[in-house]
Image 1 (cartoon, rainbow, N blue to C red):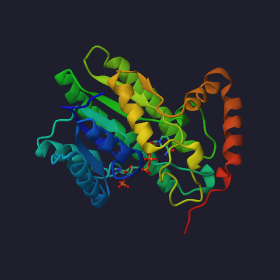
Image 2 (image 1 turned 90 degrees about the vertical axis):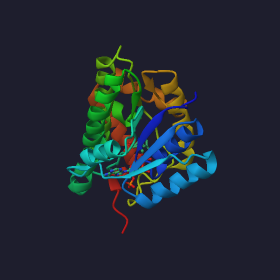
Image 3 (image 1 turned 90 degrees about the horizontal axis):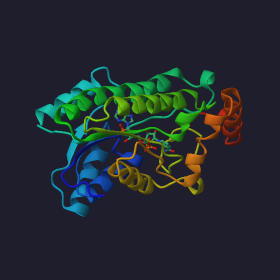
Image 4 (image 1 turned 180 degrees about the vertical axis):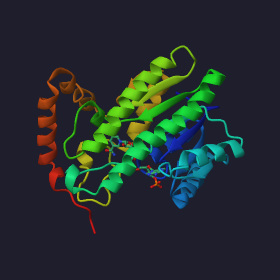
Length: 269
Ligand SMILES: NC(=O)c1ccc[n+]([C@@H]2O[C@H](COP(=O)([O-])OP(=O)(O)OC[C@H]3O[C@@H](n4cnc5c(N)ncnc54)[C@H](OP(=O)(O)O)[C@@H]3O)[C@@H](O)[C@H]2O)c1
C-alpha cells in the first residue's frame, strides 16, 4: 500500500477529508501538492507533514476552483513549478442543504461549479498528461448521496450523481491506457461539511476522515474500480435505489432527511 515515488495533487486539502488524504498519502511515502483557497491552513498542514514525515518537498497551491480562470491558473502554477502529477485526488467539494426553493441559489451554483466544473477541468488537463505517460490515476470523491435523489440536498446529490456517472464512463474510456480511474463513495464523515448552517453530522453515525482516507487509498492501490471507504452499511444503502422505483426512493430519502430536520435548515448568523 506504499505510495512512494508518487506525486499526488489533493484538492480541498485545507481541512476535513482532504487534509486526511494529504496526511495519509505523506505517511505512505507520497509527495503531496496541497490545493485549496485557505493559504494559512495549507501552510500549517505542510509544516505538519514536515514534522511528522520529514518531507520538505510538499507544495502549496492556493487557488479557487470555482473562479472562471481558477482551474487554468492552478494548471499554470503546476507547469511553472515543473510539477508532474501522478495521482489527481479530486476531493474538494461543497454541499447544499435545506429546501431547494428557500435556500439561496448562489452557494448552490457555486457547489455545482466546484463539485462538477472544477473536477472536470482538472481531470481533463491532468488526465490527458497521465494518458500520454501511460501511468498514474485519478480518484474522484463522490458520495453515497450519488445513488439516489436526495430531497433537501437536491442539488448536492445531483452533483455527486454526476461524479459517479462521469467517473464510471471515464474509467471505461481509459481502460488499457495504464491510467487507473476510481470513484470513492463515502457515507457521513465527521467533518465541518455543514458548517455555517443548523445542519449537523452526528459523529456517532459518521466515519472519521482518517479512516475514510486510508480505505480509499487501499482500494486505489488494489486498483479497485470503486471504493466505499466507510462502514459496511454505506454500501448497502446504495442498493434500494437500484431495485426500487425512483419515486419511491425519493420519498424514502426525503422522509429520512426530514427526520434529520434538513427541511428546516437555515444559516447560522
Ligand atoms: N463530510 C461528509 O459527510 C461527506 C460525505 C460524503 C462525501 N463527502 C465528500 O468529501 C469531500 C470532502 O468533504 P469534507 O467533508 O472534507 O468537506 P469540508 O470539510 O467542507 O472541506 C472541503 C474542502 O474543499 C475546499 N474548497 C471549498 N471550496 C473550494 C474552492 N472553491 N476551490 C478550492 N477548494 C475549495 C475547502 O478549502 P477552502 O475553504 O480552504 O478552499 C476544503 O479544503 C467532498 O467532495 C464531499 O462532497 C463528504
